[in-house]
Image (cartoon, rainbow over all chains, first blue to last red; front, top):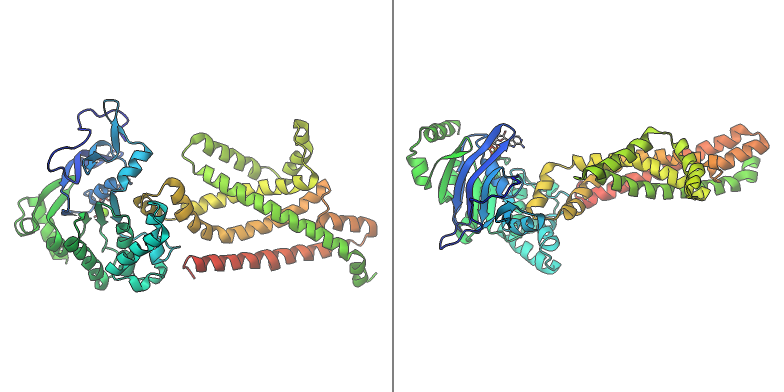
Length: 273
Length: 221
Ligand SMILES: Nc1ncnc2c1ncn2[C@@H]1O[C@H](COP(=O)(O)OP(=O)(O)OP(=O)(O)O)[C@@H](O)[C@H]1O
Ligand SMILES: [Mg+2]
């Protein structure tokens, strides 16, 4: 985390079309390894952006930084116009304190490759946990909200099962419901189908399809399923070496990639599948 | 004197001693658990002084003998103005000692909870305290029950040392009976059996039961 005051970034984004998410010159390093290299990325409200790219290109890191699971070395991330991990102070932007961070984090929800459901809670308890213990909703209201969401992901009949009794696809659907129960503005999906058996991938992708079709959520998704990405994305970003090598509408990026690395990657993926 | 006659005469004293041993065990266990949780969490603290304090505590109590600690608490602390009754000094010494071992179990169990659980809790915007209390600790608790079973048996056996500051526990009574009757085999044999029964037929089954109940509660059964 940068300790000094940043003075060349706006304290807040203003204007007619403030993006829901903006990465502004964001750099992330692990020791000598630069994982994100002065990344600029905007995601509009309600937009579904998919990130593809080779292993190690920084896809997961983008999502983890948005979820504040990783600290930022340089640059600023804005969510809904406000800096995510910085706050105004000292005549510029300074690292945010915990209170500010918790306020901003409420905007973001995330689903993980390995679900990460709480094993000691049933499906519905997993969904109610945040609403009750973070948002402070009354139990009854949290239960109603959770039941609705479990219904939506097709898991209402398993609401009282513990995760150990659920298949991977079922666990992932519960995890999606759990994240949605917090009513985030931005949802992050990190390879949510990668740990699943092929025959249950559809259960999860169908839930995400429904989300895209029926809700105005802003979504950022990392996936290796090119067909799925092509179907549902408003925009696809091809990452390479911590930068966006190429981005565009799915039909353009998949149908007529301009950059050589994109072409190589897409043909390598095609061969593998 | 047959063993039955021996028991008829000294049985009540063995019972009294066993009650004191059981009380010492329960109180020392409660203290050990409290200390273990506190020190285990402090060992994981972000603050260096806090971590340092816990490390020093654990080092001192694991690195020196329980008997010496007991004598310190009973004979030396009064020189600094802190006088504890022998019964209190007894379970406090045992609890503080075993608590240091327990702290490492708590710390290990917390670290054994997968990183993804912390991350999922953070993604739900839980505060650090909520993350620990609602998500991490319940899982760590289940993981550390089996080693705690062993530790509690160590603790029970450790309470025999309180006889050395004249707490009238099972060991103390056995020694007294031995010194008045010279029936060493009967006196210490009976003590041996009672300690064994307490550990194998009380503590072990209790811990197994607790493990089963907790595992069921957490959907692992
Ligand atoms: N905690 C960490 N410490 C050191 N290096 C890390 C850490 N996390 C990630 N990296 C490195 O950062 C780079 C980018 O990682 P990231 O997980 O973002 O890649 P990815 O594009 O998601 O790859 P994949 O498709 O394999 O999931 C990789 O080289 C990775 O080894
Ligand atoms: Mg990844």
